[in-house]
Length: 473
Ligand SMILES: NC(=O)C1=CN([C@@H]2O[C@H](COP(=O)(O)OP(=O)(O)OC[C@H]3O[C@@H](n4cnc5c(N)ncnc54)[C@H](OP(=O)(O)O)[C@@H]3O)[C@@H](O)[C@H]2O)C=CC1
Ligand SMILES: O=C(O)CCC(=O)C(=O)O
Ligand SMILES: [Mg+2]
Image (cartoon, rainbow, N blue to C red; front, top):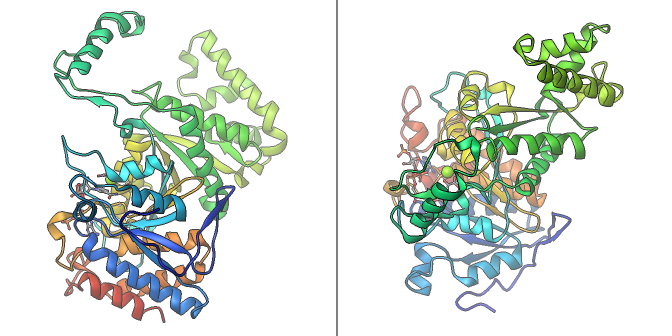
C-alpha cells in the first residue's frame, strides 16, 4: 500500500461519523515535519504533546505518530519534484487526522502551494484560527487581552483555486480577447471598460455551496461559545466585488435565517425588534427610517422595500425573537474587510467569530495573531467532514530555520486544538496551563523576549517546550 513508509505497528485509525471523529485510545496520527523552521518546531511540539498525554492519561491513552513526507524532506526521500508523494496522501486519507509544520511555496513561478493542495485534496473547507491572549505575552497593542476572536476562513476556493494565466501566455491573451471583444461589451454595466492587453489574469470563484458550508460550521461553533461570544461576523469586500464577496455576505445571511432561524438574529433584525421594544406603537415607516440611513432621500420604490422588510421581520420573528428574546440568539452581522482590520484593533471585544473568504481570512489571521503576541502564538486547524489537518498560521520563517530559536507556540497550540478535536481535553488543558505559566514567568522565545520590558534572555525553541512541560504542575 505504501511505497516508502510504514505505519506504526501499534495503534488504530480515527474514523469519522457525521463529520465527528471516533477516536480510539491509541490513534495513529500522521505528521509532516515541515520545511524551514519545521525542523525546530516539530520535535518541540511532539515532545510537549506526548508529555501532556502521558501525564493526563497515565498510559491509558497515547498517540502513535506516523511520519509522512511533504516539501523538501519528501524530495530527499522520493526524488526530485516529489513534493507531495502519494504515500502521504494515502496516509492522511486512511488515518483522518494529521498535523503538520509549515511548507515553502515559491513566489511568482514554481510549484503551487502544498499547504493549499492538502486543503483542497481533502476538502478541508474550514480553516479555523483562534486568536486569544495568554497573560504576560508582550504585544504592540495596548489591550491585547480584549481580543478573543476565531477566524473562520473558507479554505478551498476564492483565488486559492489557482486558476490564473501568466501575462503574455497564449490562453491568457485569448481570454483577454474574448472578454474585451465579446463578454464585456455584452454586459452593459461594464460600459467601455476593457482589460489592459498586457495583464495577467486570475479567476476568483466564490460559490454558494462553499460559502454556506463555511458559515454553517461557524454558526454551529458560535452556538457552543459562552453567551457573550455567540456572534458570527461575515467579512467581505462586497461593496467592490458585488457578485463574489457581496454574494458571500448574502448567502451567509440566507443560511443563518433559514437553517438557523430559531438560533440566530441578524444585526438589522435586532435593530427592528429593539425599535419596537422601545416604542411598541412605532409605525413600520418610522422603524424603517431608524434602521436605514438616508431613508428620506430614497426613491419611493426603495422606501417601500425597506418598509416591507421591517414588516416581514416583525411578522415572522416577533413572537420568537421579540421582547428581548433576540439577545439570547447568535448575532449575525457583517463588516467590510478593510473596516474589520481597524475594528479588531479599536473595538476588539465587540467581535467573536469572523467568517471570511479565503484571501481575507489569510490576511486577517496574521493581523489578529499580531495583536495577541505575533505569529508564534497563532494556531490553526483545517477541518472537513471526513478529515482534519492541524497547522500553525505562520510559514517556514526561513531565516530562523535550524537555529533552535523560533517560537514553537503556534504549532503546539495547533496540537492543543487537535487534542480538543479528539476530545482529549485533559491533555489540552495541561498544555494551555503550561504555556500560560511559562509566558507569565517570562520564559519565552526571542520573539516575545524582545518585546518584554525589561527585556529578558530568550529561551531556545527546545527550552520553551521544556518550560511548558515543567509548568504542567
Ligand atoms: N501553512 C503554511 O505552511 C504556510 C507557509 N507559508 C510559506 O512560508 C514561507 C515563508 O513565508 P514568510 O512570508 O516569510 O512568512 P512566515 O510566516 O514564514 O514568517 C514571517 C515572519 O513571521 C515571524 N514568524 C513566523 N513564524 C514564527 C514563529 N513560529 N515564531 C515567531 N515568529 C514567527 C518571523 O518574524 P521575525 O523574523 O520578525 O521574528 C518571520 O520572519 C513562504 O514560502 C510561504 O509561502 C506561509 C504561510 C503559511
Ligand atoms: O501555502 C502557503 O505558502 C501560504 C499559505 C498561507 O499563507 C496560509 O495558509 O495562511
Ligand atoms: Mg497566511
